Image 1 (tube, rainbow, N blue to C red):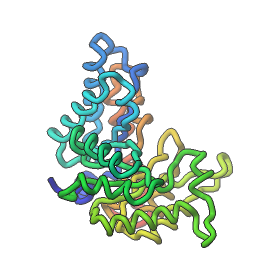
Image 2: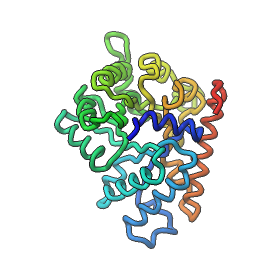
Image 3: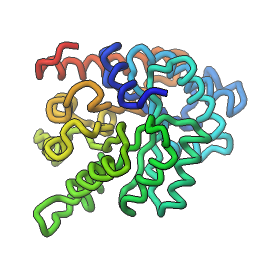
Image 4: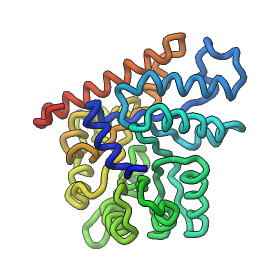
Amino acid sequence: MDEFRKVLTQRQKDVGSLVCVGLDFVEEKIPECIKDRNNESRMITWITDIVDATAPYASMYKPQWAYYESLPYGRRVLQRVVKHVQKKYPDIVDFLDCKDGDIDRTQLRYGISHFVLDKMRGMNFNPYMGSETMEALAKIDADRTRAIVGLCFTSNKSARETQNVLLPNGKMYYEFIAECILKWTQDFQCPSAGLVMAAAYESPKGSGIISYQHLVNIRNIVGDKLWFLIPGIGTQGGAIEDTVKYGWAGYGSMAINSSSDIDFASSGPDYAEAAAKKTKDLRDQINEALAGIGVIV
């Protein structure tokens, strides 16, 4: 298996898209047109239909584990979806949003769960408990082909309460975390390591003032050694132009995620086509932003 970041980079170049499609599905939003099937079958149909429809415009798929874990048959659905992606679209990377982070022996089990059993090509982790949270995952990824991505600056509003704490040395806590993960990446030899970095956003809401300094600060710390998985676009209202301007460091340096905007674009018979249109529209908006900084797609 090729290294995750190399595959991501090549896919982004080939289809001219930085879009990561989040696969976050809930039973109560299943389209009426497929409700006559059993629960497991209709979930698989729904998700794989959207995968097939959005594939021409996607460079990455990101299931959020909670949406599968909360269903009695959810793990089977996840594994079927991942198998579908890997067999039909081997050049599109898959990545599990699970945010696991625990002591080494427990984190090792999370790695076995998602890398071995679920066969995911990447996953994220919570670095709060220190270097063993990354080291244990690196042990499972013996051939160093998978993406191991640490939480750094997340897009939820209350994250600023903790991630923006000013340390005695004058750095923000999220900057310290980026420095740690960069060091661990080198210590544990993880070539496809990255950071979860929120999109540029309006702060305070309604002010028209876009906050993007977090992207500038972390690019200054990590350069292009770590890639950014970027949430916050779509329903969370992230600013695409500034996200691209301050997060871009070449193909393979960032993947911009959108989930509910795409997954729930329609509840009618056109659910797959509507998802494809949303994905294409996002790709086009991102490419316009890239053109604005001189990148020819």
